[in-house]
Length: 226
Image (cartoon, rainbow, N blue to C red; front, top):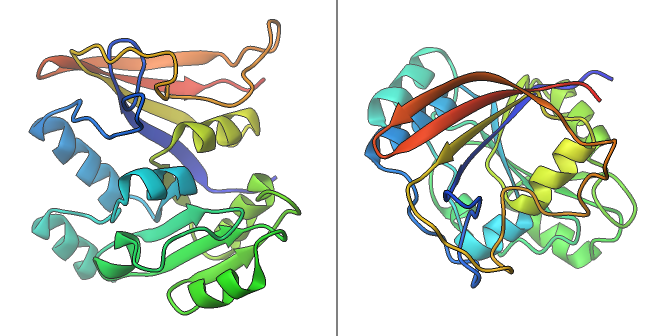
């Protein structure tokens, strides 16, 4: 299977939570890590999130640094990478920040079960890709992105998309910033949700490096083939 190089970047609490039980975003890292993430975005061809992240956080997924935007423009690129939403039922709000903020291409990937009227409305704001019956076929979606010239994809969550990508064998590396706070709560989202791997099929990682950043630690992992 041919697909882009794909990595997940996420921040989590010391107990592995990425937001509160109300699914409200919490500032886990500081300015130094924010700058690191901005560089990762600027160096990617696409930034991808799931519909849950869009509905909960309404991210713009834009490059923030003017210098990094200028460097992209100097290289003949748009100032922001392509922004991609995995949205099986075409639920992305038409007033989402991903449409209102920043220049650049947007792609919404939906399934065949998405209502046609929603697809039509979203088509005024983004390129629509349809793959899969009830839910987006992530494997085929990544193949389509590669055919569209997208060679490096940064995944920024959430936990459901992280599970889908990891369980489908679509992730090459994982970057996790672990911050110095405890969130708790059995219903608070973790880095990976979904059904989970069973004993004997657990996904193994190889530690690339661990770096202290402010009051947290950045862990870089290579995902090993199953």
